[in-house]
Image (cartoon, rainbow, N blue to C red):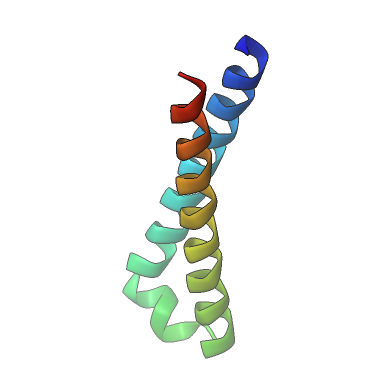
Length: 65
């Protein structure tokens, strides 16, 4: 159980960092204006995917408590 909690903690931390990076890119008006629409859309999809995975891991962590 302790090893699984540690694994979940590490993955949650990693995903939180990825979410912060993606949010930073999308908050940067210069990036959004200059990047091709496909790249911006891909970054939005990545952000959505990371948020979904983070929520799932948080649910798993709660079940372990």
